[in-house]
Length: 294
Image 1: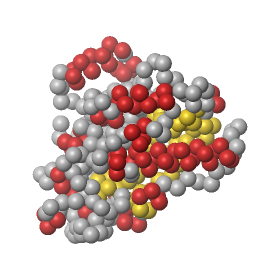
Image 2: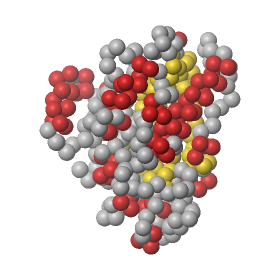
Image 3: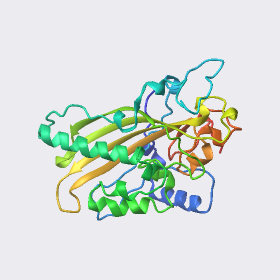
């Protein structure tokens, strides 16, 4: 499927339109809006969230048959192809470091190690995902980015914040089973002496339920998130030097729509009246194809 870059829409190039959109949202309009969040001007670069309006084909995730696989709370991924994926952080494996552009193999290896820790912390660390403690994640980034990240997570930008870190909805309980992970990262030389690492990871999260007999199949209890993030290791002043996160795009699958609209993750079992397997584009307006009602 071709990627439609929502940031190229002419409306989003109009500053007046953007201001009106924010005002409408703050008045409580139900339409989830697209916004580009950027750090305060003193920060170089920063975190520009660019959302690709792409609905993934998730047929590779769940078994497709007339009779869905039975749900086993002791083996929550059984009946899905995620059962063969790696467990937790074991699925975040950098490639062998090789020289890239003007960067040596040691520099690339260091960048991979930093980015791996960022991915693991943002998507798998239970302090972040379950307890919503963001400080372990913030500490991994350059000082000039940290204040902007704290602003992003101040409760007014939860849709955008979901592109930076995964947080389970307060009403949802993560299973004790390690999430299942697959994906990759690759290094490249970026502009102005940046060493860039692009990541693309899909993670399946299992959730507990007090009524396993009511679960229709694994897609009710397993929510899936795919995030593609561009990281950069920058040099410069003490505030700028370090790890940055730039463009991000994300899609959720088999989720509770109400939680997703607020920027949090919960499984489909939280909304039993909706069919399992819904797709949801993070931080973009709902479309007729994602299955989530407005």
